[in-house]
Length: 289
Image (tube, rainbow, N blue to C red; front, side):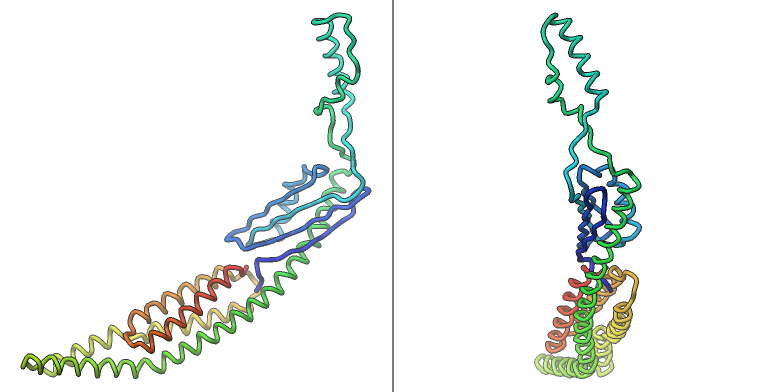
């Protein structure tokens, strides 16, 4: 089990300096990769994103890259500068013949400067891959550590759920008998108040209907099955977050049904505690890969 929250840093030599890659991850329903690159290697954004998607799974990942080293000044495009100056002279001859056109007239034209490309594509991509691999390895280690903590938390809460389930299972028969006793007493009292009587067969039939409507055996059996499935996923190596969330939704549904069927106050309190523990687990698994 791994958490979807983590952080890792990797670096690799590139030219006279190095690239440093920070990888951050948070929980997300799907795989979402976002890349930020410095101007020196901004054209490698798609390449880095594709390589990251090959290595990552569910979660939102932010890959921030920075270049640390000597500043690489933009380079003047001589051919473009020459063309610009010639066009200025032609415009001078048309509008103001004989006027001086200083060379400084083209200095402030930003389009005449291009970003440095001294690194080369192979060297740049190789450095990015090296930094990415290191960053992801460290991020995954952090995610595994947090995943172990999550697993311990979920296991402890599952143990509480099992104890509540066992208590419910033990107390349901007594609660059913108490409900039957209350129904018999109520019917007897009502009949005495109005001077009427009820056929024993009819009373037994009504009691049977009440018992059927309040029977929670199936729900308790399904809950026990869900507990076993949930526990089996705790030690899985593959991503289990979605399956855990689904199982907990089913557990919450079964607990709600038990609560609706039980008309006993003590059982009701147990169900409330069970639902609370299930909800706490659901909050935790939102951060499980």
